Image (cartoon, rainbow, N blue to C red; front, top):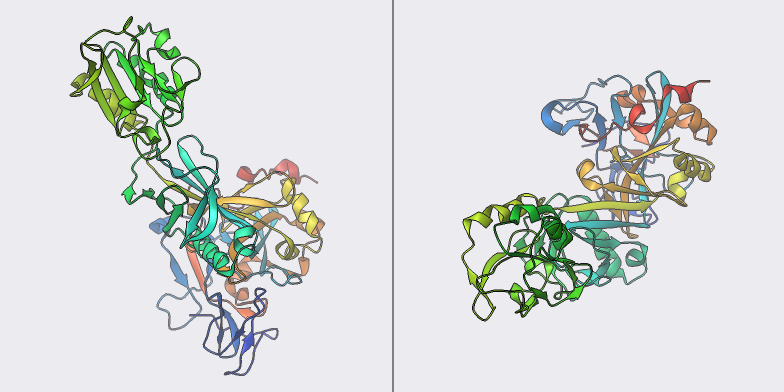
Length: 518
């Protein structure tokens, strides 16, 4: 459903004729009643119409964030009457706003508001990002695949495994080389996978010489068909440091099996500090510092992220000068999911016994301290040419304004991290944005919302399009019907997420009254 608001600058043709859409480089000719290749724009009766509704944030949380349509249509059962909250309590996001393409167009919306007595400007646009990617953080103890190996969807390379971080496997998806540097199918598959991930949909990835993993933002991963439940509490050495005192007096030896750093309590500094006696244990691995061993096994999906199903394989024969028959040993993984209790027989070989109740609580404590397994999806993109031209006639001034923290960037109203160095490179958590915030164009590239908020004086100083500034109250009461020669696809009002800073929060983003003096 769309707002039918007329205007002299509208791109209008007689019904039945095709319209040429210039919202992206594809430049589709769209027949009446059909949409373009991106499914974002359509020809309705000779007018170019934006299909997705514009998303507007309200700084209140009634209804728990329920999405409510507000369309100027008499047939709608709950039409929006143009009621708005006070300045600073309503924020127009770029979701559904339209783009600045081609370069000469000002941004679809440049709105003014007054925040704590200070005139503010927010520039709102959907950017077409060929230079963008997705960073995926998979919280799991499992080994997904060797570093630098390709990540694939439908057999096409769309990214690679990157450096693992503490308790997490990291994937880098997309980027311009996969989008445009390979074959057509590679580009299409990469774009589709990125779009699905950014819109919080599940995507199955396969890793060369590694696992199959289903990734969905905010959900636990499914690795080789098994739903993960928790990430590691820490490496084997860290686990020893956290729980050594709780094992003291209950067992003679504890080994925490880990793909990265396996810990041995009797040798570890944490054990030495509390007077833990030697046991004569020997570990088959590369010794780092006392009680810390690297490369005890190959990485995999077994004990502690190794390929082991039998943890005894990391042990060499005990030192007979120190070890004694009946000596006890607990072996446990870094998530507590695997544990086994042993006692040495007369030949000083470990024999598995039932886990004593006195040790059950310590194993459960490891599990309790493991956070839930989770997939995090971060959109990352470089804001370049036409996007900046939609803000100012001199694009480098916007870059400098962002770097000088005079301009705040949000993505769909959500906070983002701006990378240091040249250009404007942003990274944002997709779970903090409105639903279905991303689109695509078949060049291929992602379409992502982005907003620039600054003081009116700063906007004027950087050469902003001052002739296109519209008060937010006027915009919300009808001025949003037609922008950049297309009709908007209605409006959707959503409640602001309470865990996000308000996009124009002067205290959070450092706009204080002292800065405004004079």
